[in-house]
Length: 127
Length: 398
Image (cartoon, rainbow over all chains, first blue to last red; front, side):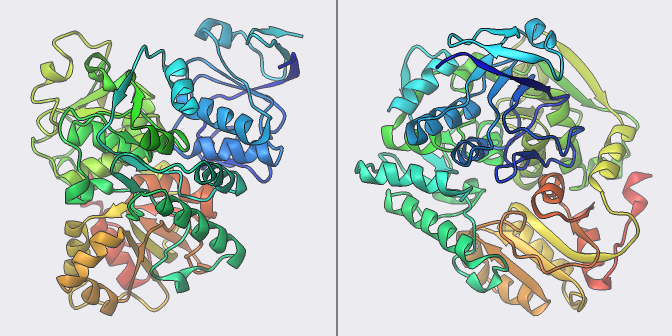
């Protein structure tokens, strides 16, 4: 993986991709989420944790297939469901969504809309 | 195997542990990626190596006439369900495998379950041990017969760190009502996130159906994979047992205002216009079907209302033997199996809100199927279905 560059979308609350993201459009569709309607495709999505449905792995893999997936997902704690979705997408399509885990204090330092660089080793820094 | 090893890396496990069974959620169609994956498994000659049940799929295979969506999607969804059956899994197609007498793992048994409500039930109510195995890893574990020895497979991770105490201002009637549990579940999910919490202050020996409603809602609003209810769940004989004798990190009181706030938030519709009623999320148990039939004795669903009850095909067969299915159908209820009314396009184009008793349905349906929702008790749901408009009973809340 080469270095990735993208704009951060910092989510105010954790999002379940199943029921929360439409893989056809890449949009956030959870009606209870404060950022409903936001475009996730191509963004560095930052949230404290994954949430909810165990189907989120499938939604992530499908989003990779149709190229509506986030560029990367940055979390405050490991999430098996998202990591497996990303691994399966890589197996099937040779493309992936890096899932990066940061300490909460580093996560909190990422500003919404900031240009972010993600290194091949998973390091995250401002562009 | 590569996926199971990847899972071990993510969870920090040092070894794998044997499982006694699996519940696979991957059979629900979410686009061609889900078929591409199972085809890859089938091409490699994979078979499940442990007893494996299947979660809901995209459509009701027993009542295909209920499908109101695109025929192409139904065909792909059906194909995916068939592909998983061909791997050797049991075609149970239910989100409540714990309602099947021969699919209930024992206390302390390691399993790999998918489906968020089933995961919460498995850990919390059965006392069997699973992590949140999402799509792909659930079937990978069923094939390999092993999972990483990490997380909730280990005793220490099952300790409650958060205490949620029912406040003194919650009226006794609400405390003893089914209605409390989905609302309490939403609060539990929000307060706990992915942590293990213990609920204190309820009467002991709460029914499995109530605990099901609680866990399903908690796994919707949060990542709850396990909870304890003092006196009702097997690892919480006492508050101290749930805490493993240690101090909680946090204690939170749940008052009437917080529960009322959840009810108001989940009720996205205003006014009393009603189009449909949907109960059975997670799938209705036999006692829940009996209860609905009893409430409908001598009554009929209003002509303008579609009343759907979702259940599993095995529970449906048992209910049919006991005459419950006939009674429900004669009252005007549609029974849906193998899927759910917020996954499959089965709702008629409704003029008005959809009423449900499920916190999970209320949580996801507005986003999934674009309807306005009213949450209420099963009694309110039936009364509303019969009169054709939203009927509320505020007695519980006073």
